[in-house]
Image (cartoon, rainbow, N blue to C red; front, side, top):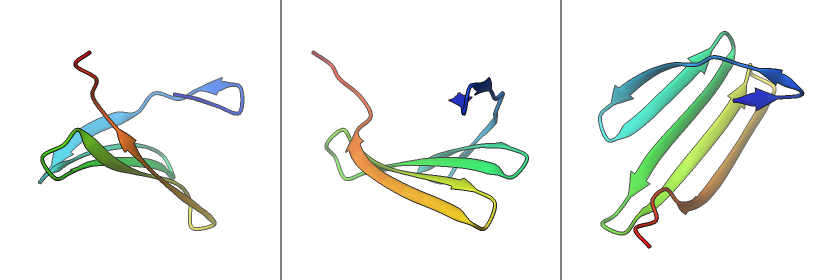
Length: 61
């Protein structure tokens, strides 16, 4: 991932029903929702910043 102009190498683990990536105090979690190709993503930097997104994680088109 490129963050603020710097490439960050994440360590990836699969948890129950989600994919978790982390590097130091930066964390990214992607969790599929339902049977559609929809997912929720949460991006955290330390304790001060947390944002969430919803969308599609796959396109079979």
